[in-house]
Image 1 (cartoon, rainbow over the protein chains, first blue to last red):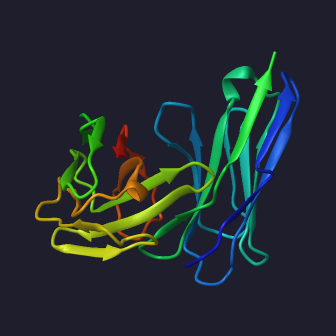
Image 2: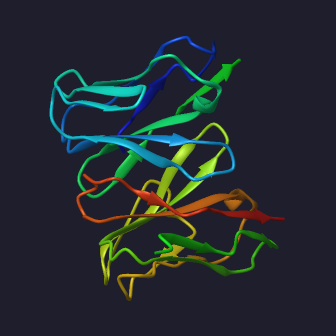
Length: 110
Length: 114
């Protein structure tokens, strides 16, 4: 079973701060790297799916980068808002199975 | 277009009882999967299917059975419920069997086994 590591486990920032999280994964047998946003009492929703080394994706204030050679992806949030409070999950696709990390829980206070 | 639907939303079982968690999608997706979510453990893959008639085991398959007789439906069966199966269960689907496309998640089923 592949191991997907996310850090930090949790963090708390003030409104307006920018922040970033890390997802580390084994670089062999790579197909795709997913990022999901998971709000409390809701279902996970996809943010990005990245497949190529060097991929950069952006959605509003959230962006992500991918380095498949060294096995990591960064998720950035610029100017955090209270509505960004959620757990951010990354998941590694190794073919037909999708393996999730344990997530980074972000809390943004106003 | 309802997306991914799951029933029931909540269920309480006694140890040893069996039940089926239902999952359906109306997006004609090939790939469907079941995850369980436990505190501190993230989402763990139970079983998945890359198309009608094809299923395979994930990380934590013991105690669960699945079948995929149609593209739309992917039920998860608990054969003999145990307290260790108390969890929140999510069904998800994706348009392609390679998991290179985003997963769409259902609302979840919260199961308690006493």
